[in-house]
Image (tube, rainbow, N blue to C red; front, side, top):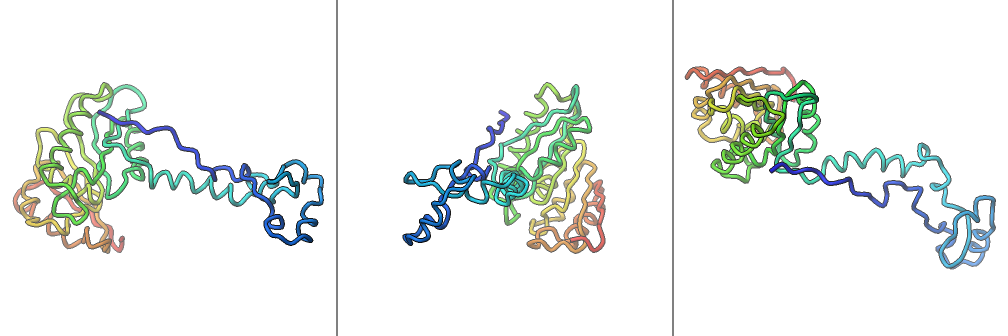
Length: 267
């Protein structure tokens, strides 16, 4: 079943102008400081302070929001924080703008799938019906970041494909799988061999460097497969260019339809 996101939670710091705290002068015990702070100005009596006292409104409450640094930072950082920490759904369905479209499964990299949603939305805008699946659910058991067995990952992929093809906004036919990093390794292991359901695979910097028996995985590729990789990618040694070249050469030697695109000097 497709899961949907809940409404955005409200954070107490979303609008810093709503936060009212006593000025620093009223926090101490010095009588002179208290007398100085209690002088009422044009702004002072607009905001009551604790214990029945009045004083100047905190500076951050007097500024318009675009000059209010705490508020401005909160409004900029909140969407980024939500993207990084929002609970990810087991599978996120994104319908095409109008009518029905061919099915595309997008498998994210490690961690939360929310940062990959922009890509899935862009694909859907082209007229495709998209299912965004967490890479942690469809990965290669040999990868260091994968906590699933290969049997569990294969089952999760089958479930995602079946549920996607059952949506009313999907035209009948095979799916295309687009994948990233951890999910890229999972796509090459679990999606590329199943030609009855998958029409093709695209893998961005797939995590295959730690996959055991890589030549056997490459030989099992049965659908057109495009791999895109950075020549100097050393991120946790998961997606090394030597592994990509080995995968392509051994697979093509056995007739697998694999194409590798290398971006020079890219990491």
